[in-house]
Image (tube, rainbow, N blue to C red):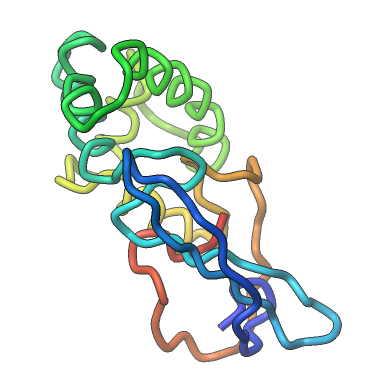
Length: 175
């Protein structure tokens, strides 16, 4: 089902994506509505869109930063999975840049948070899968995901279609 207009979708194409040192296939679907025709990537729930890392490691990193660990210590999970030693700092900078997206959707935030991870963990009620929970919160508000999305913020119009199920439970609204 197309998250933009609620119409059916059909297979469109596939492309390869890296997950650490492995290659995985990503399928794209296209809306059959002639007025919409949007395409959507079906990203597996274990993979983070727009980069080569897994959601398990990203969740671990966010929770470790929220506990006050250093970027180096929190990011050891990425290095253990095969990423370069400077990768944790790169992800940290990227997540810091997403903070304004989060605040835009979830304002007014009643508390002042020292960093993005504390904000994310507060919004997701310290859930053990904060990435998934944050994306579900965005979906319930009708917005594109705020983390690792190609589109900064996109509000999806309400439609009257019946929501049956998501092809990808982690990222309900495609990037």
